[in-house]
Amino acid sequence: MTDAALATSQQTPLAREVERRRTFAIISHPDAGKTTLTEKLLMFGGAIQLAGQVKAKGERRRTRSDWMNIERERGISVVTSVMTFEYRDCVFNLLDTPGHEDFSEDTYRTLTAVDSAVMVIDAAKGIEERTRKLFEVCRLRDIPIVTFVNKMDRESRDPFEILDEIESTLALDVAPLTWPIGRGRDFAGTFELKTGRIRLVDGGGETAGEGLEAIKDLVSEHRLVEVSEELELAQGALKGFEMDSFREGHLTPVLFGSALRNFGVRDLLDTLADLAPSPQGLDSDKRPVKPEEPRMTAFVFKVQANMDPNHRDRIAFVRLCSGKLTRGMKVKQTRTQKTIGLHAPQFFFAQDRALAEEAYAGDVVGVPNHGALRIGDTLTEGEDIAFLGVPSFAPEILRRVRLEDAMKAKKLKSALQELAEEGVVQVFRPFDGSPALVGVVGALQLDVLTGRLAAEYGLDVGFEQSQYSIARWINAPTKQALEEFLAANRSSLAEDLDGDPVLLAGSAFQMSRAKERWEKIEFTDVKDHR
Ligand code: G4P
Image 1 (cartoon, rainbow, N blue to C red):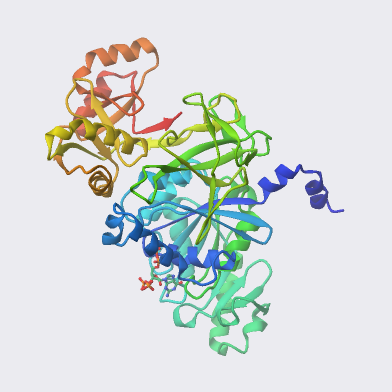
Image 2 (spheres, rainbow, N blue to C red):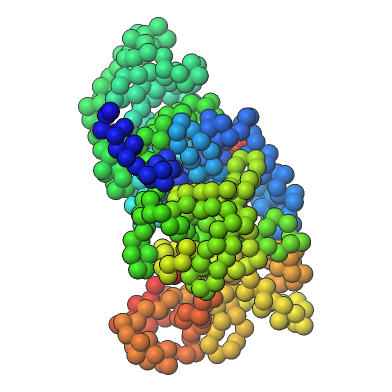
């Protein structure tokens, strides 16, 4: 028996299940090819028969829900969902992140629930704004990243230049695993740098032989010289792949391909299966939790209203961190100490949902509920722990909600509470009793709020500028220091959904004045849910 086989045979069944999980997200700038690649990954994973189904499903779904008109009008996907499929002996959970340009909290929270990410880059455009932003979030947790340089079948930049740009703009080492043979109209396939194996676009991505010999007949003498020089340069000048650096988030393996032409997709799946990490341990407030521990633990990273607006139930997306979930089991919600029965946990596939009879660390299940489960909640089999790291971000826009019908103020209050619990917006209630402010990170969230208040609660609202534009959470070294600060600043304070105080300021200047005056207090723009 080989060492690896021996190690596998000595694993518990639970550890074996954990080890075959790959939970990841795709980060990219709009138009780089995320939807196309998602579709192709699902196709290669056998989850869908025909490419085109992901979008088709989106269309069907959209017609079902009123508030998602916003999404249809703008032609964007506001919803984060999860898709599970198998490839080789691995179970992949692909967490979809919204594709629109606005900064979205959902996207960021989704990235707290993955173990790796695929960064899709348009070969003609290189690193674009949103990719860079999302990359920064991945870096906060040192998430390992596999890079897929897409659209090689189109006019594209020099591969060396693209790699340089990744290194210099993201401060991330690159290790190409494949190298493109030609570009644009001449893109013929790729060369696997380690083995010399060649795959051709026209060969359906199957191995066509090894070494340049294999393409001798396909390209002119002149091009062959060019290709071989480029390969030599690539092999000589570039770093080799190092597992440790990759796992620590310092180095990205790079693949070249064309999602549209199904090329490089299998390489990507193989790379994820071979190199991407299975679920890792996670810190809780009391102790680190290991994925192969027998007892189930999980956290909620997203809550989504049911597609059917007539039933106000919601799906909480729950990422398992350890152990095994069995349908029907009872779990403790540690924030409230309540017991919740998991009667209908669900898996999501490309076209269907199905009851999850069992799930393991790394899996994401949807748990239908009526508002009991909140973003950041920890679920356990009884232990009192809370996972760290599902953040709220300080809003970049603060508005007062103007209600057309003043008689409905009470209804508005409870609607805002419910939508804030779902993470659609944040709500801040000023200490001085003035009307609540809503805070959003991207303007699109305000449109979603308006749409949902109208469709689901029958409330017509508009928004007014507020005197405040900045909100920051407050960390004080001692309780006394906090109380002193609160007592001295009551007129500029509000509380968030959890009752935590925030300081409101009208300008960056005001905020920096507060910082100067209250040196020991830390003002933060990210809050961890506990
Ligand atoms: P996104 O989700 O990242 O926004 O990108 P999406 O997959 O929707 O792709 C954006 C456009 O780029 C689409 O064209 C898509 O067909 C095209 N595309 C994606 N991958 C490749 C590729 O490898 N090569 C080439 N040449 N094109 C690619 P579109 O015309 O905007 O949309 P559609 O009408 O084709 O759906």
